[in-house]
Image (cartoon, rainbow, N blue to C red):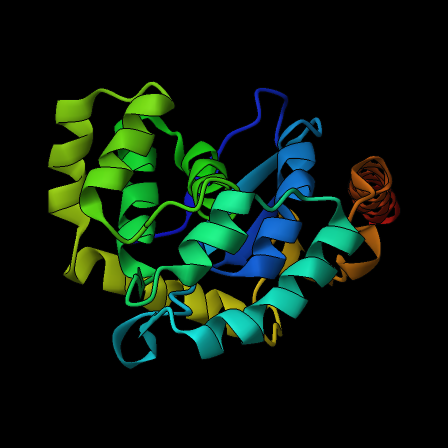
Length: 237
């Protein structure tokens, strides 16, 4: 499945490619940056779900896993200001045996996009369900509830989910990993700006965590510079 786009009503000047995983804590840290980018005039946002915890990389929650992720989560909260709920720290991370699998929430995100162009909204919802509400986002009934909560038609979402599960989701993951390589990314999240003509510019977002206004300014500046450069090139030809 191809990349999924959230169009901006202003004339498109660039596309922000966002390679992520729904179970990636640093992607959750970057969620305010994604939301801010969606409001930048002339910019569309395309998501690419990389499938970090799929197939042999799926795992279940154990005490060892809890001890491993908690310091990272506290660091994410400190740098980004993103909330982590007691239901996550004291609930889900103590729910030994709970499955961590990126494929079902990614299928739900693809279904939300296919059904109503709401993929980015679904990313945000599943992240908060996981990290704030401590819900099992690998469980299909939970994903169905989340889709309903953001206003999707339950029957249509369920139909799209069933259609996109399995092979279609795996194709999307494979395509997303190609985008990761194309952008020169080493992991999730990876962001890259694509300008008309296909030029791709990898972006370092680490310094913008917790600073969405500065991030928006940077995006607007890069788009304006690209427009100016294109205009100059046409004028001198």
